[in-house]
Length: 218
Length: 218
Image 1 (cartoon, helix red, strand yellow):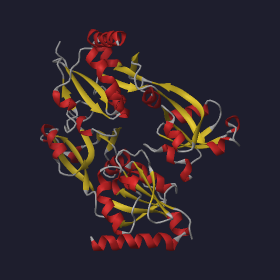
Image 2: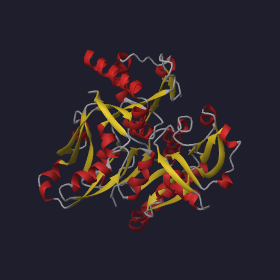
Image 3: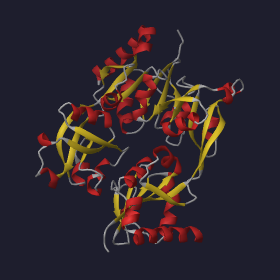
Image 4: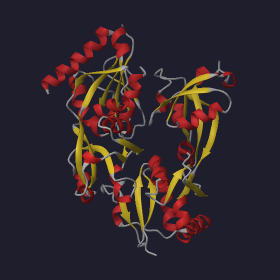
């Protein structure tokens, strides 16, 4: 049973929070993983049949959905945006906590009643979530897709509203924006490719259990 | 004539190459622009009516297309992907030079004739360019959109081919990939919002001239 298993981890902020859990589950990446000058993206671990790939947070879900990785760590923001039927998320890892919210300039909110919206223009990294959220109450949201810096959009006249992740609220405040409504709480999940879980049930269930144990100890 | 003008610049590698041209055109950003710890995204300059926003390279085109910025610096890869009719690109700045290519594993190419392809699966950051490129010769390209780490995709079984930017070719070689065909040469352009150019022709044409002069001197 030496078929290779690949786990996809997100670059950046979440990775720091994820590593203690990974190590708690008994996975230790090769030394190059912690070398900031390394351009490698694929790493061996102390487990002979387990490799790590380090990719963008949005790409973790894509790698797992297409079976290029069998497991991964991804925020439910990404899972909600793509809604890949090939992925299931057995474990909330409780890291990367933040929430997704609608925000607009403070001076606009005074005259604004979100209950009266019928058509709005929104800058966001999450066009699918945004459209679905507003469509559910009959509001048509025209989304302008941005990869970052959404908080600049209202003051530059791109749109009045944004949908973005909020953690401390500092970025909203610094840009004169206030929260109008929350869409969802966000945290990172252990995700598994469904087909892999069916064809290699013991192997994958074993890893889910080890992450659960690491969580229980943390 | 004190109406504000905003220029959108791309974060990262291209920014370093763009700054000498920007300064050559007489634009000096406020000190915070060069402070790596600053979380600001919008900056004043020595020109009273000119501000800079620093955003992702893909977002530069979106900010300019929607008139949130009147000028910007963007690669023709991004312009080709979005094909915004609201943007024109009067000046090739000759920076950020690379090219876009199709690549696949070296061991596959031996048995492969690109002239025989009818349906291929491709991992890429450029699904529109890729689809158009192959459709033009009757090949249907099923694109898997990734934001980065395309070069991992073939070895993980996600797809056989990728479409990606190539500069030295080092990343392809390091991942056992070889170039199959070139799609386009890439460099960064000065881009202008068409509506702004029509409503404020002297203002915007003046800046295009200053960038041209800075290029001539460089």
